[in-house]
Amino acid sequence: MRTLEEVQATLQIAKLQDEELQKTIHCLSFGENVSSADYCLLELDDTLCKLIEAGESLVIRGDADEHAVLCTKDRTYDLKIADTSNMLMFVPDCRTPDQLTNSQENSHIVHTQIWGFSNSYWELRKQRPKLKKLKKVLMENPYEGPALGGKEEDTENRYTMEDLLESIQASEEELKTSLEAVHACQIDGYWRMLDFDYEMKLLGHVTQLVDSESWAFNRVPLQTCLEELAPLEPKQMIEHCLNCYGKRYSENDDVLYALDEDRVCRGMALMLLQNAVKFNLREFQEVWQQSVPEGMSTRLDQLKSVALVDRSSRPETINLLRVEDLSEDTLERFNQLFTLREKWTEDDITPYIKDLCGEKQSTGALLTKHARSSMQNGIKVFNSRRPVAT
Image (tube, rainbow, N blue to C red; front, side, top):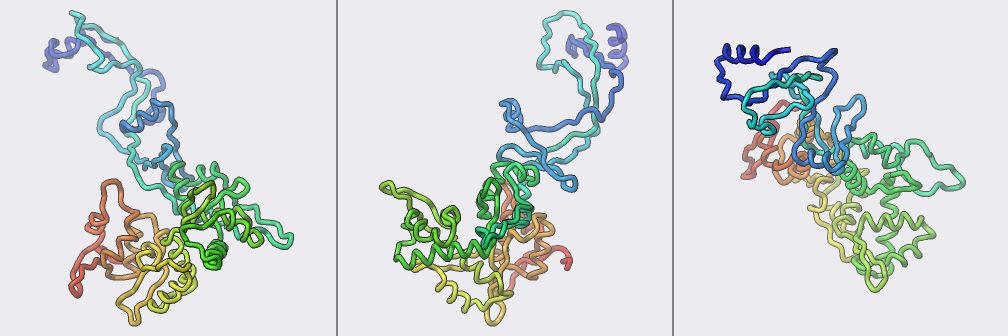
């Protein structure tokens, strides 16, 4: 163990003046069996520090073949190892300069053992939750309605919220938001996605009832719906359909729903497009308008991120293209889009890249990085900066 005289001699060799330094001198030594593998360092911002100090938990999620992420209750962070050229040492009870006072007149030594060291740390970056897997998992056993004719329902591949949190790389709040977005519902304690045909069947029952009763689509009475449609479908499913395609409100102790025009129109469009490779645009618009409840108006802007119009073909066509079916990886997403179409207008491509934007990032910045712009017939279009892999 070093003495004060040895320390002062070392300072003199280093040409450091004693008065320039703190009076408390830490002399560090390695403890027995110290290893860099004993500890991991995690860099936290102020928000995460406050969560830890408040007693909340941070959870690392990811299967063995996935890149791990860290989740709070409502955010997801990417975990990446950052190397440092300086050795980071773990010293218990080490006092930093701001914790020291120079009240003592003479220098003194504090002998401290190093418990561990590292040349890297985990760096956190806020990122989008990885939710593509959610739909894939839920579609392993979609709900197709009550089992008929004494047939037993398939009980395999059903997931509780705890199961999904173990499997999906997202925070609990982000997962709940996504479950709502894909119209999943809880049945017998398990989260299930409805089979698309069954969901459209439910929506058809509701819209046909609205038309037959001549209700305004923003004043649909829940109780009457349940009573009229109960012989056809479970009441839970009818109410779930109303929640997916409308907004619930109360009036004079009655529960009513205002059907959302855009959601209903989009659902009907998806039903029409799902079995067609390409649809004549004019014919599609006519059939589409006829399929929605009276009083609703169909518009192509209702189909952003779910369908793509080709104005260059003759006749003009429309086909199904859902953003949720594309890759979550930015480079792969752009490759998929430029494989489908060599040149895109900004209006056409924006719905398919908007979800890729990070915090404070615009779709314009994404296009500048991954696409090249040019003018075509007086309209700005974008094509790939890289050779497109087919």
